[in-house]
Length: 266
Image: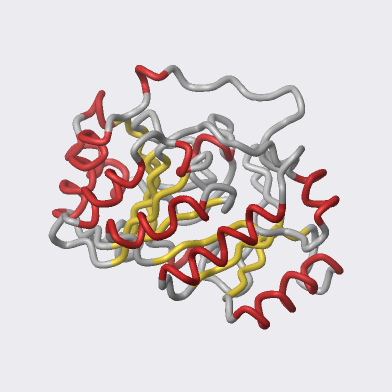
């Protein structure tokens, strides 16, 4: 379905949880965040219904995100449910990779087609600092498992401060070339200040061609990452929420004062 600026809205990013097994310094403040109540988080059945209605509005591409989606109980079942929805032709997931060694083959068998894995450095000590305790070897094991499961392409999301010529970014880029992985450089963003930029190596950040809607874990359908507009699928009903989100999708991002990266799905 076309929005008011003639963009074809066909991509739905679904946050299945606001929880994460890492505490990355650019995502979660040191003091932590207030988590959603479990009763507010959408059930798998509700998520599937949102996708089915979305297909009727032209959605054919879905990405599962978090928080960290692999900590959501029975996440493989949700992947299978979505992959079986007629009309969904592209199903992917963004993960920090910590649990991917365990889940890669199960996810592939359930119908997941692609994975994006977060990796900002090749230095194990620096990784531990960035993630406040994460083990980079678990990410490497997850990448290997994804390769062995047959995911293609496997994309690496590398967060940068200023540009892709930074030392850590160059090291990750070298690793990706050796392992036949695709890399996307994502500059650190600030929702509240409205600081965002184009993703290098990807298609994010291009407002004039943005084809995305975002569903938060508690059911808010958001037409723009950098905007406060949101329409709860329980409050408005799924069909009306889609109508409002598409019609009111802004021409360009501005600021988002309501959400944090851990609960919006990126």
